[in-house]
Image 1: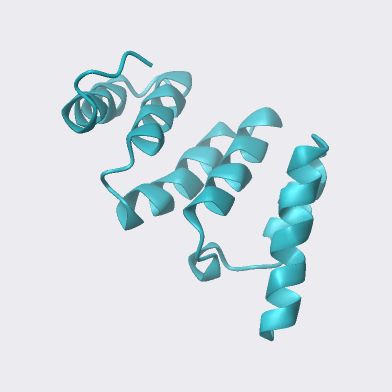
Image 2: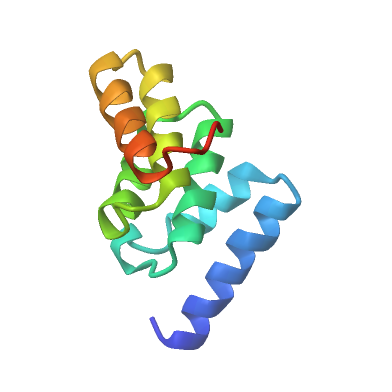
Amino acid sequence: MDRQEYREIISEIKNSYKNKDYERVIMFAQELPLKKIKENNVLEIVAAAYDQVGKTSLARNTLELAYRRMPNGKQTAYKMAMLSLKLDDIESAVRYYEEFCKIAPNDNQ
């Protein structure tokens, strides 16, 4: 896959998400290995699309990749906590929420 094709797929992911076409977001995201997606915001979009269609564990796995790349991302930590709660993984939810509180002690998201 060349750069132009990569950019086109990323553009399709962003546009489809903007249009709330979550199935299309997932379809385009599956054309790329998640590890090749360089932008964390695109990983967050893909995770949100998975969550919207009820694939919460795939959403959390996708967001975990973004979190590992940028462990100081307060929104990513918060989203990880929320997804963990949806999956009834209380231990992980607490851990991510505590990370969120360390990163942004004055933020009451």
